[in-house]
Image (cartoon, one colour):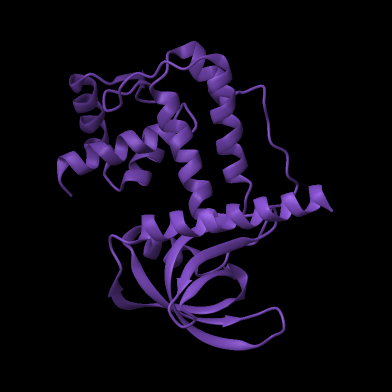
Length: 238
């Protein structure tokens, strides 16, 4: 492994793991020997990272040379802590890990006082159970949205009818208790919503629809907002 890659992995480990972190735990996390770990810590210190601690006591990343300093006020810190905590409680393991990593990275760019406020925020999320169970296909779906690659899915609707669809995945929408895929359905030549937990299989079919995703998603959201506005108007005039 290249030294730059090792140092990046070490920095990331020190951002997300609870301090103080023993050298043995850091070596295990980054896949290097203790001797290499000690050399890498010294390399990071020489590059400007402020790392507190020493052999036998554990280490803590105080100031991260790889990330620029952030200036956030108290309400902004509370909003970040609350939003990232909500993501961790949704039930999507990939996004939960990403939220924890993002929180650690942001905290590493803050002075000591604001960092403690972020990590021990006044605003908290309490959910005894995850909001939803993540679909086994959600990571593939998310990657296909980002890469703008079409999918072939096997879908079972609310009545139990199973159909095969060729779709252009646009976005994953997180509702209170379910994940919904917003897509252009090539099989129906129209926009469609698919409950992710009803997608029984999903595979990339090799077709790219770049750069159409943003425009298609904008059109779909405009249509949804139009339907919502029309429904609201009817309710007020009835």
